[in-house]
Length: 352
Image 1: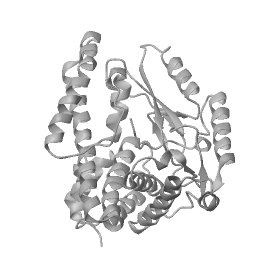
Image 2 (image 1 turned 90 degrees about the horizontal axis):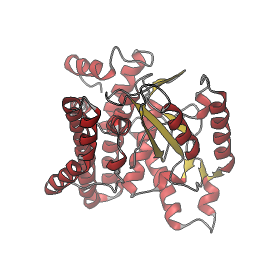
Image 3 (image 1 turned 180 degrees about the vertical axis):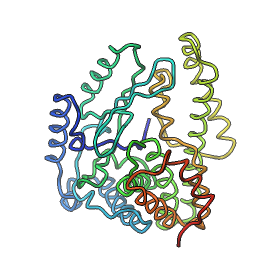
Image 4 (image 1 turned 120 degrees about the horizontal axis):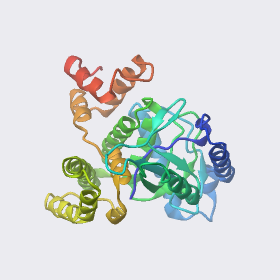
């Protein structure tokens, strides 16, 4: 399943209590940096496949476009790393075996986060097994991540894993990551991902309109509509779980029928004319950790849509508004970030 989620650069995890984790993270990051080649060399090389060359050009256009939208200009993507895998990092999440409560880890700079990132799949799987020694035994989930951001602290290379999909997909991912370098609320990963997803989706539509024309835009709108509908589906599943599951037996039945509910959802969505990116949704392997981690990244965007409308559908004004409010709070919105914005949009108008 493709999840455009943010992971932390290993060097920012400098308070982790496990020396082995720190050492492995540092070595993994160093190996990636050591493999990096200047993007210009990659573009000039006769050995570079044309699809890779074209995807790099898309990244550059999308990065410039993100700056036009008001996102932070960074030195990212000047170097390229060819990976042997579609995953740059493997993320581990954990949740209570019966309640939809995520385990969180705490770090300086970024606050609490609902996952740990590893450069080796084996290390991530070992961490999951170690977590399962706790009482009560938590649900765990290990997943592939194609990109991560250092939140503007370092110059991030461009990973080959980021070049998958169509032009709109690549543009969305670049805009998503640029948002993280622009706005980050400490201990608010769910909010940060929700905002980055929204800006990534909306930004990709505007990118498509400019660079690919009306035909491609119509197709892109169907895909974005599908993304939002999938978010609605996941949140419906969260609410269904809360209403119907209190025992291990009920939990087994819930996940045993999840695939059928997903197929029904796809059939209903197809009738609405929306489209979906190819996703490997292995519901047979899902549990509370998988459900919560996925729901974090597919969200109800009502608050953001209201703010964007207040800005006359000008995404640049919307981004500047959010960034300005975040700075007023020294990196943290008052109370819950989204509740703060709900109150804000009731009492303030979008600045010019």
